[in-house]
Amino acid sequence: MKCVAIAWRLAWLGVSALWAADGTWTGVVDGAWSATANWSGGTVASGSGSVATLSNLTGPIRITNDVSGLTLKGLVAAGGAYTVVGQPLTLDGTASGNYGLVVSGGSQTVANAVKINATASQVYVANGAGLSTTGPLDYLGNNTLTKRGDGEWLFSGSLAETNSSAYFYVVGGTFRLTTGAVFTELGGGRLNFCVGSGFAHELCDGQRRTKRERATGHSRIRLQRQEYSKLHAIDCRRRQA
Image 1 (tube, helix red, strand yellow):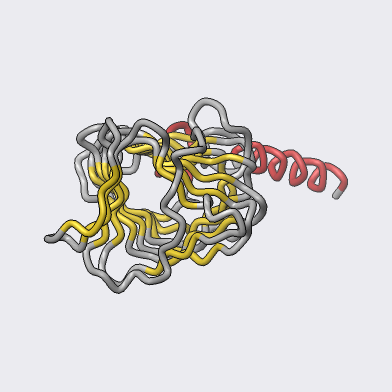
Image 2: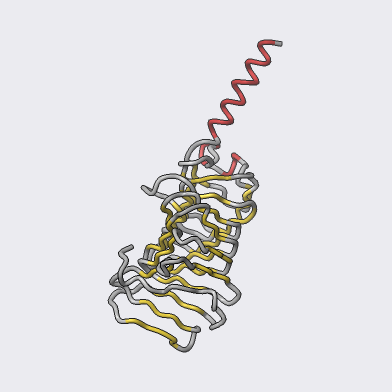
C-alpha cells in the first residue's frame, strides 16, 4: 500500500510539472487545451510566467480552453488561423520576451474572455497579420495595455475601465472597433486612452473621417460606426507610450 501511494504521488508530480511550463501547440485538428496529445512532448502550456506558442499550421484550428483559471505570460500565434474559445485566459508575468497576446503571422481570433493581471501587458500584431478579439477584456489592477506592431487588432468585444490608473496605448498599426463593440477607457486625467507621440490617429465611421490630428506614422484607431459614445480621452500628445 505504501509503495502504491509513493508511485501515485510521483505520477501526480510528473503531471503537475507538465502544467507549469512553456508549451508548443502541434495539434493539426480542433482540440482541447488540456489534451497532452495536442502539445509538443505532451507539455501543456499553463502557469504564471509560461508562454503558449501556436505553431504555424494549416488551419483553421479551433482550440477550446477547458482549463479553469488558465494563466499565461504570453499567447503567441506563429501563423495559420486559430480560434481560441472556452474559459477565460489570464495574462500575468513580466513585460519581457513573449508576453501578452502576440500574433507573428496569420489571422487569429481570441473569443474567450481575457483578463490582464500584469503591471504592463501588450497586444502585438505583426505587419500583414491580424487579430480579432470578441470576448470581454478586463484589467485586474492599475495596469497598462499597449497595442504594438504594424498589423490590425479588430476589437468586437467589450471593455469597461474607469480606473484612473489603467492605461491603453496604441503605438503601432491599427486598432479597429467593430459595430456592437463597447469600449470604455476613462479616467480622471483623461489620458487613459492614448495614441503614442509621433503617430497619426484617425477616428472614422468606416466611410467618413470624423477627426484627424497632425502627426507622422501609421497608428490608427478606427470606428466602423458613430455610436461609440463610450470611447473617451483620445489625447496622448503629452504622454510617451
